[in-house]
Image 1: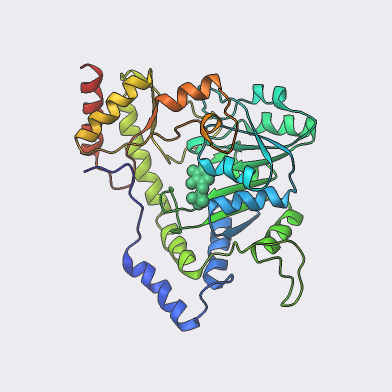
Image 2: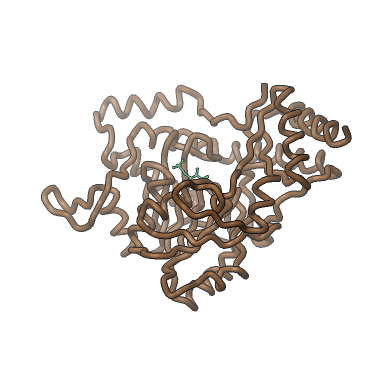
Length: 360
Ligand SMILES: *Cc1c(COP(=O)(O)O)cnc(C)c1O
């Protein structure tokens, strides 16, 4: 059996070493020493000025929307994980979907301006599969129309664009450290901002708005993360280069083996590094994609329709809109298995089966 993904686990002793410290200190949560250490190490690793370690990537998005005081309409992408859209609705705003670019699979900056109305307050875009959005074009539009920008960087851990961390773009960037992501702390998330005022607000928000034991500075929530999660994050961080290297080798093997396959790949940002978070392939038709998915499944190889369906067309709490490119891409895309200990033989087998069913 080959699953779509397998969570990375550090050697058990590496995790246990952190646990014995927790038992000694008996400090389990509320921004303990491991959570602080993780924040410091992540700031160094990612080369960003400020970040906060929070409960998960969804709460990170909700905090970002709240911290920027967004109201009314928010322009966003329909091709993302549900949390990108649901956070907007959860915070009482209306998502306005703009179609994606068929090559990058990110929100198409050329279509953003047509969707701006006097009620638009922000753009929330996802760096899909870790591929950076056109951050310069989006910032230009935002500046011209006085809009805030939030990036959902749940897939983009470690990516750099135009020579700096992808998380340095936008007013706030978020990341997910969920177990299924490239780098994780079991559950976890990050909010990143260059702006010290916004950082301060986010820090209050993370801890109920407390400003000292008996005073409140902000409306807050409980978005703190625990020492146990921080320990997993710290243990995994020691393996991040190794994880990256293995994913790179696997992805490049897929690239070579699938060169002549009748599917296409996402076009990556030219001024950016890749973190090899996913291996999506886009088939010519939904039919071809479904045939491949079923065929692999019959050999106990599991793939995932990620992201399907389009967020613009299927949510019970939103009016459906059709978007030309997104509707087609969402139906034709399939993510292939990718995790550090996937073997070359397994990659070759997957590719062989994909050709066999294509020529069948
Ligand atoms: C995983 C993911 C999230 C949510 O992160 P959680 O940590 O699971 O809450 C948000 N956006 C995108 C694009 C994701 O893939």
